[in-house]
Image (cartoon, rainbow, N blue to C red):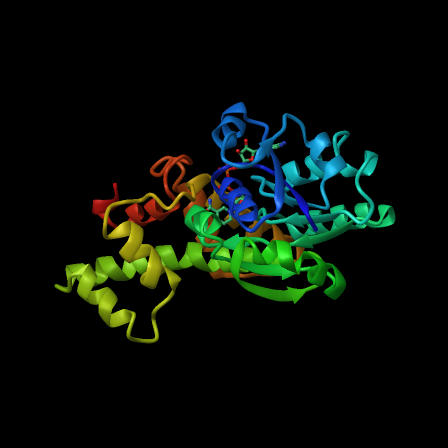
Length: 291
Ligand code: NAD
């Protein structure tokens, strides 16, 4: 693996491309938006105008795209690798996507000898820039082993959770919990504040106890209590992830009432907290200071 393509140079893909280049890979990137392409020019990344060039000249291609529909269109559409890719091409999808799409796309690529590994990430744009992402990985043992040098150049922690699509199932479950924890932590902070305990002291107590979560340990101290709300992850993307969870739960025919209520609260908050806002702003449903 020498030449790596990155399709999608947004908040996450930009940092991943730079991390790959720092590790010595030749990196080719592209994005549908000219502004995203221009932002990376002159930073050691060769930026090209179309994905077709990337598929034709790379050993592995990393996707960092907004939705499952876009992943489908980029990989199986007319500009995709089925029309001309290097033999043994490896596709690494780091987008948060739907496992059904992932499995369908992987099945369509397999007859052409192209392997797909799903490796969705946590850690935000900062983790992408510093190569400290966490990845939950789906794929065959062989494909994941081939992908390892590329994955290692972008991440600090990797957990192989199963076959193709298992990474996306796990990521959706992770983000459903994060979405739920933001709502429940905001309610706990509000309750404690009304009962005379300051948020900072409350969190110190919770983080020493069994109620702690990534939200109480990272999100509240970093983005909520500081008022920064600059995580680089938008309401729009988290709403998409909650919808992915809803869709998966529905397809499985499961009745999960707490998850359904979490999905309703995220959906119904669209007017109060617009899509472009930082996803931590969902706490504004309970906390005035976030408005
Ligand atoms: P983003 O919107 O900043 O970047 C996505 C990029 O894809 C944009 O630059 C867009 O122009 C480009 N794009 C859209 N359609 C395209 C196409 N057809 N061809 C080429 N490029 C195209 O999003 P992001 O925050 O970088 O997130 C990317 C993925 O990573 C999403 O699936 C998201 O859910 C996931 N993710 C994001 C974060 C985060 O903190 N931002 C964290 C974990 C996972």
